Image 1 (cartoon, rainbow, N blue to C red):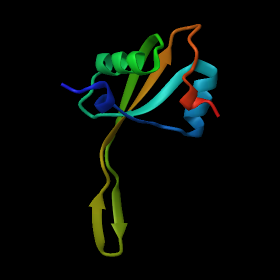
Image 2 (image 1 turned 120 degrees about the vertical axis):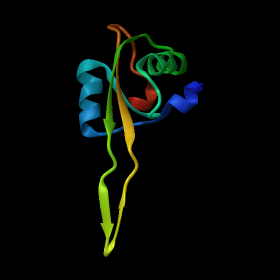
Image 3 (image 1 turned 30 degrees about the horizontal axis):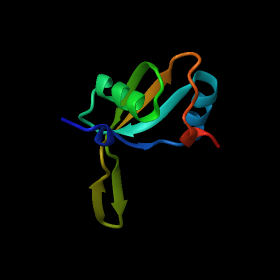
Image 4 (image 1 turned 90 degrees about the vertical axis):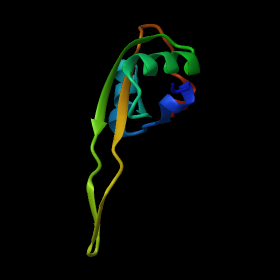
Length: 96
């Protein structure tokens, strides 16, 4: 069983995520690969005290990286887009 702090690893701050936050009230997080949508929803609601409308997830496979003649793969990770219900305030971490 994952705790809420194990489910959400860190916020993903990018230009696309910033635009989604402002226009659609959607937050972006890097989450644990084993976490499902209901665990992500309850973790965000508990940590930030907001109501979540829906959660979308995407899994990114590790890319092949080369350093000279040595090759290896980066880590596989999972991203979650969490849309807040209308009228909910965006948490402070995401404000610039």
